[in-house]
Amino acid sequence: MNYFLRRGNEEYGPYTLADLRRFAFTGNAAPSDEVRPETDTVWQPARLVLGSDAWPAATLPAPAPAVPQALPQGAYLPAYQVPVMANGAPLPIDFHWALLLVLTLLTCGMAGYVWLLVQAWWVRKLDPRSNAIWVLVAYVAIGYAAIIPNFAMSFTTGDSADAFTIALFALVMVMSLGSLVLYLVGVFSMRRSMNEYFQRVENIGLHLGPIMTFFFAVYYFQYHMSRIARWKRTGVLL
Image (tube, rainbow, N blue to C red; front, side, top):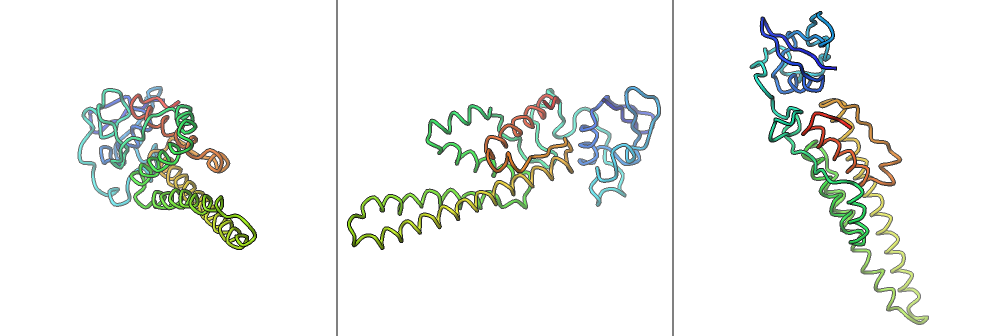
């Protein structure tokens, strides 16, 4: 459903509800402005329609600086040539998850590791509090470092090497377990940041599930990141 925005005697729109929330977040719509659905003639205060949480608390008492004349920052319209997230973060990369899977297979997993770090970098732009990228850098580093003792075990032979082999095996297991823990901490931190942003700042009702995150994180995230990038450019969320 689309909505009209009114300030004084001037009427603007129609806009989607997401557009109006963006206007509120960026200060281009005031809580005292009036809003009505395009199917209705009754005007209501914007605060009642959008909820008081649509405005940053610090800006609620202040009047909005300007009525949106054309397109606000990050508007979800194709005519807007440089769409960005509401907080100024860049758009996620629009790359089909299936192509990413093929690329990962062709590179023996390396592309998947690199892409996960790219995704974590974007999440940090989206949520500056996120440290997922550093956790995942450690995950990748330890995962590849575990190749060294694993490779060394292939050169141990004879009874005299049994203790050394066991020590190398134990080291590989500890490093692999540590790498797994770091991976889970990293991807679930990314999941939390994305869920919070897209349920509070730009509410598109995104809810990333824990099971899909656990098993298919990089491809699952990419599917939704591509949806978000296309939504920003076209205004259509598929």
